[in-house]
Image (cartoon, rainbow, N blue to C red; front, side, top):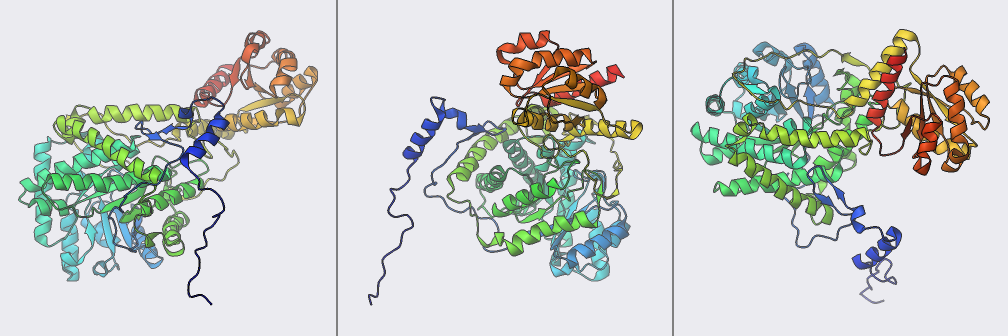
Length: 623
């Protein structure tokens, strides 16, 4: 027997696939349409090609140590410290490796959070062995400046050295000012307080990091990936300067800072964003004369992608977000429970948030490979494009005098607002689909239980400097507002607003557009009443009267519309229909259809939100 074996190559008898061959096939399908039709764009205007070749000479971006899992951070935000403690102990006993203590009034408190007092901190951490390398992260507002001293006092009573505790303090005066829309003083005075506080904590023996450059501020407000990265860089540079002025060496200042980023359901952009931040921060370090060290990046699943409606889908969104951030090298990840947009999450929602990470780590082994995206043409290209775009925005902020000055000039806010407005338009037109909210709604869905549904407002701070606030948003809120109106009417009258689907012809004729119309109207809480279809206008009008609906939508094929839509519309109008829609585009029949009483045409790509708001306005006028 031979001691050697021939290599067995899968599909060796086929010619190798090439980009040129692929383009020929694509051009055949496009039939003369421009190839650019297949190229997408991000919110920053970055191009996304339909296919990429492998990136040459790509190297992994250094993040976590090889095969090291990220920290599974669990959010602790119950306003009652005893309840928060019970949640923390439960989480640690069931797989969490860290706790994010959220204090009221902090940037991402969402209306809940612990009081920033020594008693609350002591009670919340009761029975938790802080010296056992349990990761602790604080999210504090300006009212929580003394949280470090409170922790030092607690550790002293336990006879634990501050340096033995793995704690990130999360001080972020710039992010706080951006969310509040102002500051109690100018940046020079705030920077001195900030720098002195961190210098004191270092003297107490804490290792840090102490300051968070928080990109969630931009993401929550609707900003783009490059804008989020630029804000992080600008905040980090401002903190480096403040800490150096407080007496820290540049290297000590660098080690005192970490980053927070939002992770959302766009897998490739999220991965590229996390990878890009490491490259960008390394460039900052090099510009400061420092040898780059891997930046600690904490990820949190995105607030703005959470929906109140069909909130179970938030579990899937969070899974993609964790997958993306984890593969891109995040050092710590916190999952917002799927019911958080409805109120304070219960034990089930918290368990799902925790187990999402456990499954991906323990069963899917996501942490075993360092930077698996290295060399992938699409993600490598997006990473480099984000670096270029973010660096340009960062330079604009620096030219304006730094991040605080840029906020005072509303430079950052105006750019975020423009991106948010464009995204809102895409969501209103359902170009960006929100499953369960703008598409595939369920009017009979059960609302998950929450511990408290009425968030409290955090403590206010007197502001002497004011500018436009970067207010957190959820992109599903406009559709949810309409659903809330529907629920209110159901509670008051026993019935939701209705639209009668005037199905014409056979099921094969109307099913596709009837399905479209049902999803469209019910996304706004307007219940769609279906039927088996009609060919007789008189029978159609009688069924409409029996339905109790005030709105009606014709549904069928273009061929059936050409022969029957006008007669059906006249019969419906005579029967008292307030407003007649037609599902589809009228083409050259528009004048004829409008003359017959058809008021509006609804089709994919139209402004669904505006149409639904108009429907409610007509219902209000008719009542």
